[in-house]
Amino acid sequence: MALATQSAVAELKCFSAVCGARYAITEVMYNCPRCGALLEAAYTSERPAAEALKRTFRERRLSNAPLDQSGVWRYREMFPFLDDYRHVVTLREGNTPLLDAPLAAAYGALDRLTFKHQGFNPTGSFKDNGMTCGVAQARRLGMKRVACVSTGNTSASMAAYAAAAGLEALIFLPHGNISFGKLSQGIEYGAKTLQVEANFDQILALVRVLTEKLGIYLLNSVNPFRIEGQKSIMFEMLDQRDWRVPDWVVLPGGNLGNVSAFGKALREAREAGLIATLPRLAVVQAEGSAPFYDFVNSGAREFHAVANPETLATAIRIGDPVSWPKALYEIRASEGLVEKVSEQEIADAKAQIGRCGIGCEPASAATLAGIRKLTSRGVMAKGADVVAVLTGNVLKDPDYIYKYHSGQLKTPTGEKIESTYGNASIIVPNDAEKIAELLK
Ligand code: F0G
Image: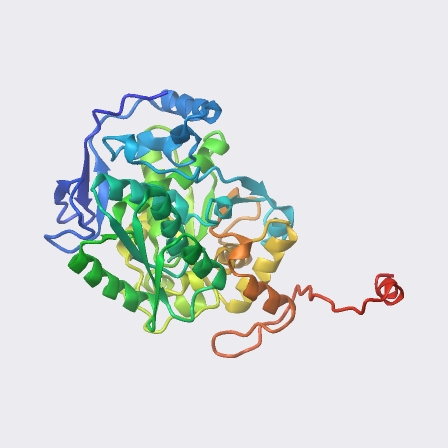
């Protein structure tokens, strides 16, 4: 079931409209050597007609071929950067559900709300969508070692895909600020895990020096192939909705790779004739780590990093997001916006998502907290068609859950987080009568 994309010409293109330099798709680079801006994958080939593409995507769901079973590679005509699909290692990533959540909708003051739950991925987060592409490119380039700095999910994903591909994985983590669930995944998948006494932004600078020096392939989201893979989250969401475009797509923002990928995907889907309009993108940040919120909403001319980002949603504890220029472009192109939410708002929204029988990790719950704020401010209409992307699985950070529900959760500055929707575990004696009394 292959459509003719072999003639596709893929290049790396400088994201700066002023520079726009182009480089071979096989160059190992993450920023434009001429101007320093981010790079992106660009294609000059003709795509098959939209109706043929939609039919092919749908037919592949019946196929047993690994490439077709992947919820990423199923959409490969939309990111034809490889010349040989034998480089691909798939763990059947993607294939994540759209879940209706009436309880969460009510909490967010919406008539209806759908979650696209990326926590159903093989390593439990959306990073798998991009990692299968990044690792395929690493193999194509003949790389032996791959590395990343991570707040946890990127590293868990990279470790799994590197292991499956026979590559050596080096993971750099902010010591003390990564959930045990995520760290243990990296360890279990056989990666070398280095915990550095610094924050994400500082370690990224360190890793960029080391990868350059040692010839290691960098798999952070500055890697344009990660972004190409994450585009599939939007293609799959649209395919699952029979290409009906929602009014809004809401997602949490950290390093801002995901919003960059979503925006590119949606614009390219429109160019390919798969959809006619764009949804508005709404990025939600945690108050203590909200440089993009500040930048977009203050109208400042320069981007200011947050030097000491803080949030219990450690996945998005990032003060100097590398992809902000791409994210800004996509927010503008989609007439989107950026919101921020407090620790208490994240914690309560997360408990509500749990009560739907769905659950997610703290960063993901910023979406529902953001929706609640946007509807209360009248920015998002009650009747709007909203898809919120839950980025990580509920089991990624069990410590947080236990502390919230037992009233022990504190903000990074030590203030108590109210256990508004608490569900504390009860300790009972081994005594049927006493337990029966309790359960009356
Ligand atoms: N949600 C989760 C669960 C994440 O792990 C991340 C990022 C984000 C949201 C934010 O996405 O960076 O594309 O804006 N985690 C990265 C990591 C930074 O290292 O795992 P973003």
